[in-house]
Structure formats: structure tokens, C-alpha cells
Length: 104
Image (cartoon, rainbow, N blue to C red; front, top):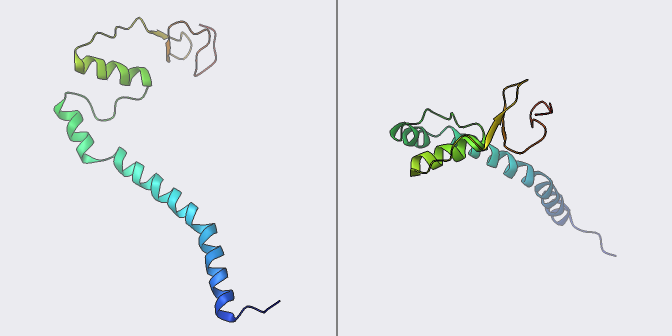
């Protein structure tokens, strides 16, 4: 078996380091990019021109209500039930609160 040269060994070590570090850097870049999109001025401007407060939508049900109100569809509040303990909105028909697990 041949001994790899110093350049071949350096190339293999560089490739191994790249394979170990590249996914982490890509993940960090993705999360930073998503944070920038979340705080983007274009999104804030769109929300302001459509009469919404900046990033008030925190729940999936709230997002659905905001989108249906914009389209002129009445979603109604019958699909939401408030928890008596913590006040979290839950879908109608669920047995336990998804936040505090109190029985509804």
C-alpha cells in the first residue's frame, strides 16, 4: 500500500473538515436568513398598508382569521375556545388546552 503524499493527506483533511463544518454553517445561515425575513421591512410595510399591526399574528388560528378577513370570508370565532385557566385559544372540539393541558 502506498503512502499518500503530504499534499494528498492535506487534501483529505481539508475535505473531512469541510464535510463536518459545512452543514453547521449552512444551518446557521438559514436561521439567520429566516430571522431577517421575519423582520423584513417589506413584510412590515405590507402589514401596515393592509391594516394589520406588525407581526401580531402569533397563532395559526389568528393567521387563518387574518387571511380570511382580508379575503372577505367570515371565519367566525366558533372555531376557537378560550381556556379558562390560561386564556389560550384552542380549536373547538379539543378536550385539553394545548398550552397548559387543563381540561376544557
